[in-house]
Image 1: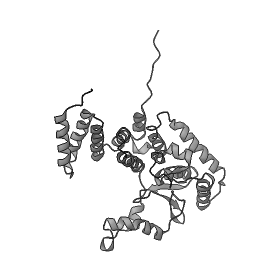
Image 2: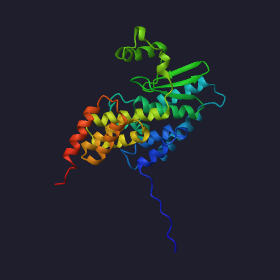
Image 3: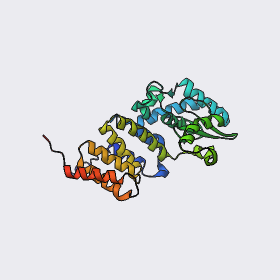
Image 4: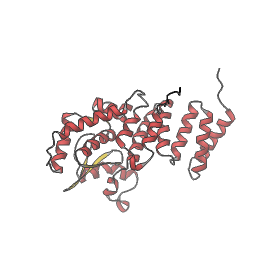
Length: 289
């Protein structure tokens, strides 16, 4: 008698890789939810998505079928920020949970980019055209309306005027010499961000949190996702190699660092990385005691 076929469930990283394999089919919300499986391996992404859909259904029931876009936007803002109580986590901004959509959905607290992903999903389901904006230092949401574009700060729920956007951008302009003769139009900073870029920004937020805390195992999980998401971003491969080195995984570290040296020949840190590679090779693999 033939044995029944058995299939192994994909790992969390394999599941994420399948979601981000192709830009045309990339679901920002599902891929963002999946990031939380690193900290919560038992997280059921489909259950989280179903919960978001239930919120969207509740919102749809409050929006008249003939409502114009401005009415839909007002209902969305009241539902999201008032009824549901979503807001920025001002008390613990650097909590990794702020970057996990499942946690944000449960606590109603997050950072601009994760709040934006949820806001955009609900906006889309009620027929609004909403996109994320990778504004320097603060992720925003842009909605295309018949009267023009509306920019929302998902951290506070406020609609931002042009003057407020200019004020928000000024520190970045000054630090990068983009003032006076080198000024650039505000509109260049308000371009819609592709889903892949949004996911990369979420992961890089987590990357900085874990690197600052020297939490090498969690940092490695984030870097694994970044390498899958951005296979040609060789600096992520370098950083993963350095994380491997911190964990004593010399073979893996050398593999990533050698790839970085081969592909990022113009990088300013080539000499430093070559020196690190030489030290790793001379030290050899760590021995168990």
